Image 1 (tube, rainbow, N blue to C red):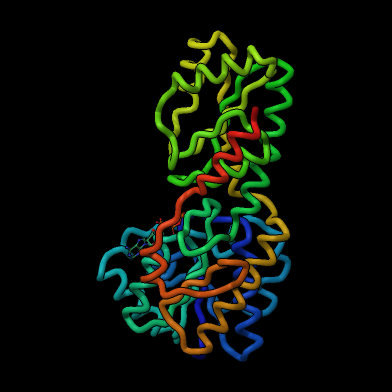
Image 2: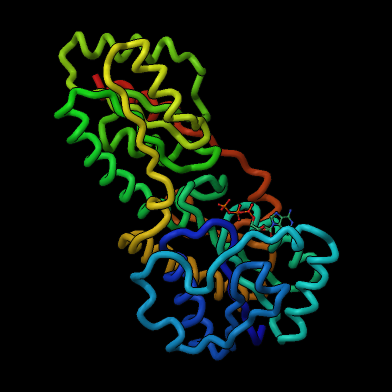
Length: 320
Ligand code: ATP
């Protein structure tokens, strides 16, 4: 390996810059060249490729977003697009690519690997929805941002004795909802993995809690369930308790990364370069059982994970 390319793809996540910085500096330190590929696979196909030097990543570790920017790219899901991507890599002398993104981005990396470009994936998503790893770059920051926002909604919710439905991100996964559910002491959490669509149960729970002297009722609603505003209207009508919906939205994706996201992303970035130097390809870096490890991408994509039943029960049992 002589030249490494690095790109960020799919949704952005705080800590991606720390990972890019680590890739650039670990690789330069090992005497390799580094090229930054802008806007994910879309930028690769447009040849938006820039040389990265030690100073290209100065003053970035504390910044949210991604300095390389990110995109979704339909063309790269086609065989022709992938072929073109591999040819562009070869044209620029890129013999290894580090892809920071989610499962979709790893599928792209898998295709590039099949075309002779060595690839390593780094799990970058606020959703924590990558099965092979207990940690994804950005989750810690996002869940802390959501927690602080929910604390603020709770203050006003208690003052007005309201019921609040707070919608958090996570796409089809309920990890942000579960973690904030525990951290914010929510009365109910609605997770795509566990939701039984029984709104009457929710209504009964709100009425019971009010009778038992609770001054507010916080419902954390995962994005995968959606419709928080219409749910609020129905709950208000059924309970007679003023109910408001707050959709936290993209604020959860931004902001300065937490210490954990900076440290883990830095270690994963360096780890990915070390893997490429050892001749590895089609691998994804993960954090599992307290250690940084790596898996074959095919194997990683075939894995499944689910919300812990025990943690879900803890959340419910502590909100009495
Ligand atoms: P997140 O969903 O967490 O934001 P992601 O990486 O899963 O991240 P996707 O939009 O699924 O996000 O994928 C990002 C990009 O990866 C796509 O726009 C596409 O360019 C590429 N990609 C996705 N699936 C494939 C595939 N099967 N083959 C080749 N490339 C793919």
